[in-house]
Image (cartoon, rainbow, N blue to C red):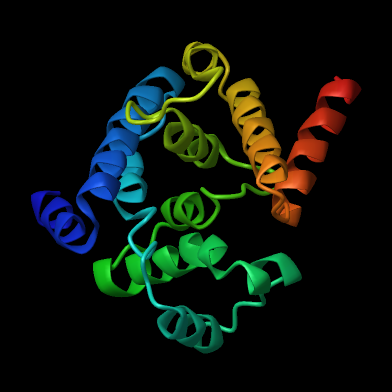
Length: 188
């Protein structure tokens, strides 16, 4: 893991690397609570933002090579696909073949329907790591230790509100994921 950590540290800006370490630590803590393999969280955590600063032409090259179909929101906001590109790099450069880890990297930005526990842990850890500060974060941090699905929903809704306040487009996965959880909860 030291080799992975050193490579990531060399790739990211100092502030982004501090964020990354916070995500790793937070995700490992949540994995202990929810009985998930912490090694998976370490891999996903260190690599989730690995391609965050990738140039547009590099992103498009990966998208083309991997035949990733971008929706309209992603086409207009290429920074949203850094989870997709980071998953490809994790597979190709770091030889990670565990689909659960790759999916946790892939969907950490906007979620998806039927998130796994690891997916939710990574999404929530990204939202609550120690470097983050915003209204409601302490409530979310407490909730994350009690009910990961409710914490995921709360973090997702916070993200949607943030995007609306910035007058940006909402990723369809975020809307579909939120609606799926709400429907499931009303059926129960």
